[in-house]
Amino acid sequence: MALIKSISGIRGTIGGKTGDNLTPLDVVKFTAAFGTLLSQQSDNKKIVVGRDGRISGLMVKNLVISTLNALGLDVLDVDYSTTPTVEMAVVFENAAGGIILTASHNPKEWNALKLLNSKGEFINSEEGQKVLDIAAREDFSFVSVDKLGVTTTDELSLQKHIDAILNYELVDVAAIKKAKFKIVVDAVNSTGAIAVPAMLKALGVKDIEVLNAEVTGKFAHNPEPLPEHLSELSNAVVKTKANLGIAVDPDVDRLCFVCEDGSMFGEEYTLVAVADYVLSKRKGNTVSNMSSTRALKDVTIKHGGEYFPSAVGEVNVVNKMKAVNAVIGGEGNGGIIVPDLHYGRDALIGIALFLTHLANSQKSIKQLRNTFPDYFISKNKIGLENGIDVKDVFEKIKSKYKNNPINVEDGLKIEFDNDWVHLRTSNTEPIIRIYAESNFETTADNIAKKLMKDISEVM
Image (cartoon, rainbow, N blue to C red; front, side, top):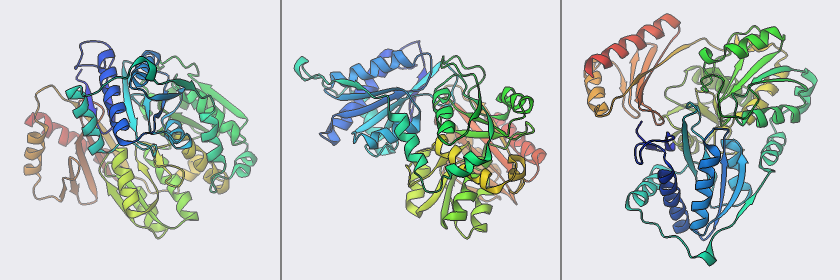
């Protein structure tokens, strides 16, 4: 498996040969490059490091911390954490940057270094390229023994994160507590088992059942929170007569819900529901990436705002949100970004705002879902072998559909009257993603299948 270097960080599988996988030498090299960049940017020597529950997490963390110390940088080790918690800790602790060790939704053999700037946001493409250049040249210098950095631990970062959410003005703890929700959580054997129950208890939820609650990194199922992976959660919600189910990914930046009857609320509708609530309190604009449902645009227009699409990738969504002064944004994969809390996908603030909306609506979660327009997105992917020229593939597809409206800002998005299909290479896996949306599920599936066939023929 090739080592993947992108705006989403340095990601790869554990083991194998250097340069082809995320080996110890690769971890050291890219950590040293990032530490060098931060040292060039600022005299601030503090770096926050946290990790999800992966099997390789402790090994990778020890390599990262030792490398940073060897550069003369001080590390605040928050250990088991979430991506949004580390992002906020960077700001709380006035650090120069941060590293969260997580491969997000990827299976257990993967891990990654996600790199954060002093604002607790993902570094931009220019900074990312500088890291890659420094790593390629191995242009770093380690300090003498008298100047080694020191490492301290912090066990309060999650509590600080939760406290900030509790104090957020649109979170109504009293309403949530009064609703007396019974909730089942699928923590997928990662740090969601720590963070999500703590968040729910702080919101006044007392009846909580946690599935896959041991933080072992041996994920009980594919850790991406998609419907086909959530049958255990769905069954548990029905069996226990819970009000809803909550699923997160291993680093707790993606969020989706299960309705009381075991049906899926729809990960695309996590952002739609939260935006509906936020926009009812604050007029303004919204942003999601162009692979996300048009339901967000519908809800935004309903509340008198304007919707803007962005390229896929959290850093692209954040940049667009800043440009249009959006009051809420995110991605259709269940990523919620609340800008006046922090510019990062955050399942914990998503949970708090969603439960506030649900409690105040006095509806069941199924009834709430039925208040939104119905669109269906067919999400598919095709694996890429080494040597495939994706640009050439996309050019041939573009030529075939030249009579349709086409957007090439991020891969290839083709419009078909009221339907669309979006083709793009993943930032996190060697695949082409094919997303298609329509009012009808079979139509979305058929559009996706047609384009997958076109791609296969071209390749």
